[in-house]
Image (cartoon, rainbow, N blue to C red; front, side):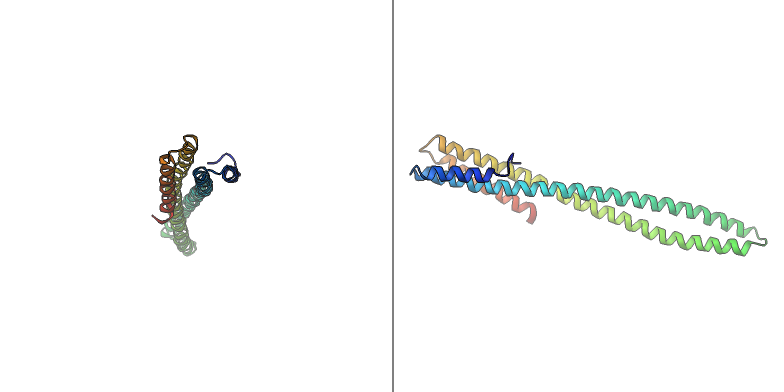
Length: 188
């Protein structure tokens, strides 16, 4: 990622200074560098956003899994109580009806807790899937922004070795590949 959020503006300033020299090739290359810098800054920001979203979704998945685990533990506690009251009801006696009723109540509560736990598990799986999608985009954007930075460096070579346009053309190709990669991250 860029060291400075003003890097794109600095490249534009250099392009303006070069335009005063009167060399059309230098002007063209400098403008290309400024455009590539804007694309690189934009893709770098998108890369950062995808990283943050991946972390956020992963944290949400962990929270949902923790809630699911808590719900399953609560389910188990209700299951133990339900079992104890069912055994007590089967023994008969003065409180057998009361114990049977408590066993039915715990059984009903277990069904609700089970639904809640399954809902938390589904939420965890969905958040993990979303996190993986953000990580995938992050990786593609990392490659794309790297290509854009390399394109800027190669275009700079065209300024250094005046008279040869192959570095400028190569920088345009790399810039197009980097930009296409960024589009692919969201469309592919």
